Image 1 (spheres, rainbow, N blue to C red):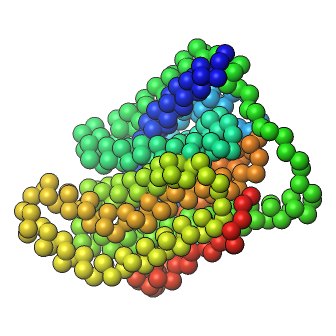
Image 2 (image 1 turned 180 degrees about the vertical axis):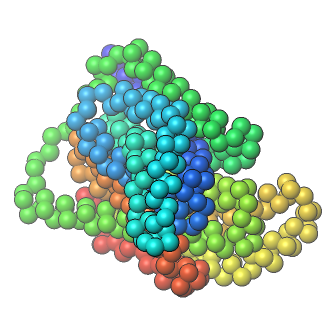
Image 3 (image 1 turned 45 degrees about the vertical axis):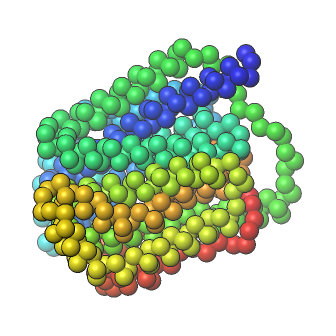
Length: 437
């Protein structure tokens, strides 16, 4: 097979993968929105219950990305494995009504712990939520490292391929969030909305299975890496230590990003309200920024050499741009009222103003945050044969940091320090001098 035909076939497979991963992201956010609502109807709609359910959801994503990243590096057909993962999520989606109904029967006997032993009650609640969500979220978290392992064929492609996958999946999440909040749930109800998302997963699985059956496997299964001389133990140890510094820094970045999101949401809620439309608008704005940041990195920096200093500079600008939004908080009500009077007091105008104010506060920092994932994944991945584990470990570290940031922001920092002090005291990790891994 000629090189041009080979490239054409790989481009076609990449388009199929991106197409499927876009709708996978949409289904994933639909699940998150609906399952959170369904479980809080069972467990209660308190702040602690919502945080517990979301933490269990994100913990499953982290575990799945870490474990399946390693599995993907050993796999022979990661493309087919991706299809199997999507099928597993879809099957679980159709079983959700019966599984959650069984959970309600378990929840009733333990509710009495809430008055006498609230800490134990919340711990049991987290464990129960985790058991309900670990299987599908583990499979969801696995999809990014598995697809990355299949599509990355050289380090020259790494930044662009991983950036495209991350951004495409996040853009799908934008559509899923908007569809769930503005259309599916109000029109169909929660159970049928879950069935829609589950059907999307099964269609993706069918597409992957069909494409895998018709493609010629031999030219696309082999990963070619130019042999390099193994570094001496001292150099290898130093490189590994720097890689772990990057990973810990990325976990701190995830922590900070959720603290920011909490602070922005609290501030904007005081201005635009706390309806489902307001929260959906804020989340959509946040996700659009992340997706755009991933695309910007893939297109502008993906083909360049990854450097630690670049990560440090991006994080520095995240912190500075977040701090720059603080003076806006006290002016947001006045801006909102003047724009509402200027353009008319209608629902459509109100919706557009929600989007505008959310973007005014979140857009620049979230675009910069979206650039960090493909960059860190490339910095942490030291071998082409470890693409899956590199991407999976990076995603897991950032997600674990996000879980801790959600708890710290919602339960400790904002209640005790306030929104402005929380953002001002949030320190970004500093990068070491310019170097490459």
